[in-house]
Length: 250
Image (cartoon, rainbow, N blue to C red; front, top):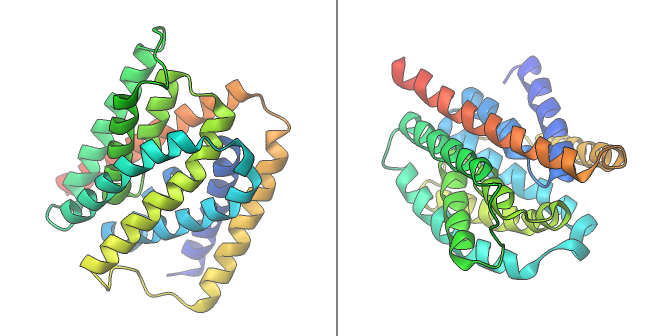
């Protein structure tokens, strides 16, 4: 890894952590596409899973009181099933095929949620929770991006932004940890080798991003943050789709 690449990765980690603190997600959406290009699909996604867990764990104490634990249990239970299945499927198929599939599924889900946003859907319905959790866990394992699926669910049901952002932190710890551990069991050499100081610098970048996100939260409204979430979700899904198509055509 060159110095330029390392600086770019740290910059993306800092911006991603700020987005995560503001919107509840965004870390993997910003970091995953570049990580997979630099390190390869399997190692890149594995590292994104680990870094995502670190980011959410550091944000968790700041949002603890706003977490919807009932929603977390529903989403989390089905996300674990999806993450385990995704870890197994990722070993069987081409990363390019998986990236295309993830991109298409998420874009369709987000498009459907925006199209139906004029209708009244409630967070009380259980089957959408189950579907969103399963799809999020699956895409998290396959491409390191689990946020768009739950973003689509939040848009569709008008889940309040504060509770949504807070609940995603333990949720991402659960899904990212499940994905990383299951992949390490299937492929013990999947995590790219790094020096000890890399983790120290990453930790400082994440803390700096969280601090920046805290300050930015005082300058924006919940509706602006929600629009930011939707944009990030579409960006992550599109990046996954384009990356997969480029790999397939190459």
